[in-house]
Image (tube, rainbow, N blue to C red):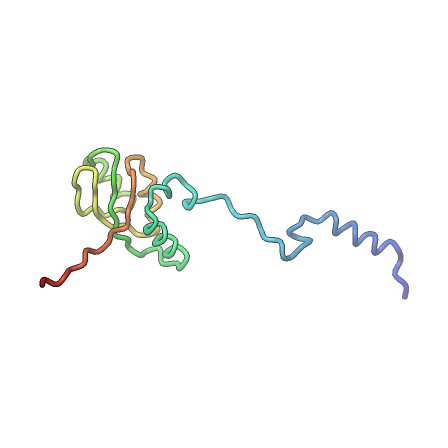
Amino acid sequence: MKIPMIVPVLFLAALLCMPASVAFASAKAPKPAAGFDGSPAFAKLDLRSREAWRQAASSGETGTRLECFLKTTHPATKDDEALLRSAGYKVRTIAGTILTGDVAASELPAVAALDFVKAMELAVPVSIKKSE
């Protein structure tokens, strides 16, 4: 059985009209628009808190509590403390423009997005040294 000449021509025309992602199975899909990762709020995080957030997000453990320090643009008020609590940050200590507390990884973007939050830094446990 002989294939009519029009079939290969139609096949070639169909390939040329397809989008690249359909025509070439190995073509990668474009990256989605930047979310928290590319936001101004993300820029407020130090490297260690960025990595801790990424690790929690990629592993699906977004309930992981992250101990962190906050630096605010002005001494924290009761209203600021209430906004932090509503965003998910559990305030423990307030000393002027520095706050200590913790936040679930899933709520970190909301805390970082608050206008008066200037910087967030993952807390480092203070090691206890032996007395000599």
